[in-house]
Image 1 (cartoon, one colour):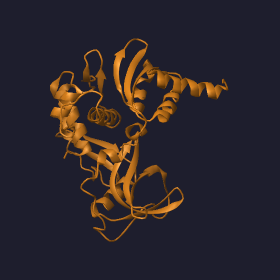
Image 2: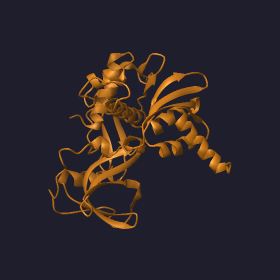
Image 3: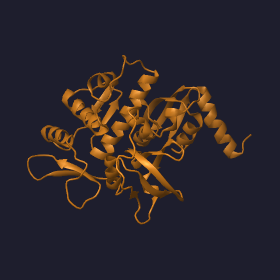
Image 4: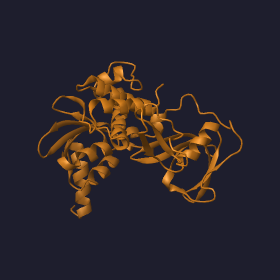
Length: 305
């Protein structure tokens, strides 16, 4: 099974190699890590899962690798933005970055990820949270770790590290409640040491069924249990990218003023709260039930009964 990094960089290389718009269906058929068990049909749970995985990876490509692969409604497909490098330099960078070594490329730089990008001394380095290095070491040894979080001492089994909305998280099994917990690394409280690693190795085993992507999908719309609604949201031009990163969805129409983004909403209250965080720059147009949910909340805040 492809790792998240391998999957993301394979996606970039695939789009670059095609040299033409690519569809979600083509990606699931051709790119390792996106495979599905049956042909995709828009609106199904499998289609939504594949689309959300792709949206998360597109955000990672843009934020961490500087590669902009975005949906273009005019050509009905995903298209690479023109690179700053020429075609051959870009291809070399993508191919070389696929051999990332987590140990880093420069001694004394904890948590740096990098690799050579050509046959000279050029290097690419992505800085990560300072605690990633010690946690990766504990994961490699299958050793439990102890730290302070929200004022309480936690002793957990570190299963995986990942990012969501540009924040690093640890997914870990908490034996005290026999549950999977997620901890934001920048909220782990400093102490001496910040994270203590047990001396005993091989203290736990990560289950075969552990879903790495689901572990770091913290979007309430992914696991909401409200009745699914197909929403259309009008978003002003300068806020489209931020809206898609925050909410997901597909751009289905664009003009000089902005775009229409369509998405399936499964957690109504969370959708309303996040929509309003755009301060009027995003307006839900349908269905009527979601429009009423937002407008009634605004009237209540204004004291208009």
